[in-house]
Length: 221
Image (cartoon, rainbow, N blue to C red; front, side, top):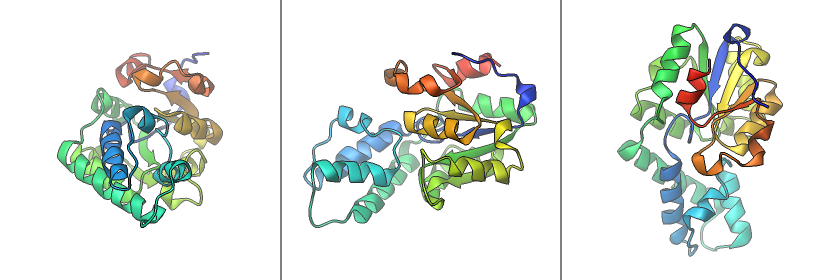
């Protein structure tokens, strides 16, 4: 059921990064296909979509379980993938449509704004710097700094604490099923903004509201 948001009930917003704030999913897919090919695994776009929203370590472990490789550890592959994605972000990273307008909207309303990503801080910093979004955020956080990453809600609680805001007064925006699961578990108001190919997937039914894009979400407020 689509719940209407009354902004007077909230004080802060928490953004996911990959695929929600930054148009990075195609870059991740490109990097994954390129890197896994070097260890003998030919991934298709459909294969990459199987793991959208998972922390990188889980993505690599997923493919290792299906097609074990030799000569490189999971950690080495993870490190190489991060470097590849960071390079692509520096080259072609851009905000998702409607994101800057949404940040301006919440800033003008006096909301505190945080970013909570499953990606590591170097990648978060590269993305925010490339897209020139630093001025909008009060706090950045990575799930890799927690004992457990998404869908564990710990990173959202850390973000809310650093914003000095009760989690119940936070709106969290996520584009993946994994992210929405964590946002719901946190106790915040979870908003799903899935990619078009994922929009009708029932995994998003647990969100309190769902929108096709950021512009539609902001127009509803």
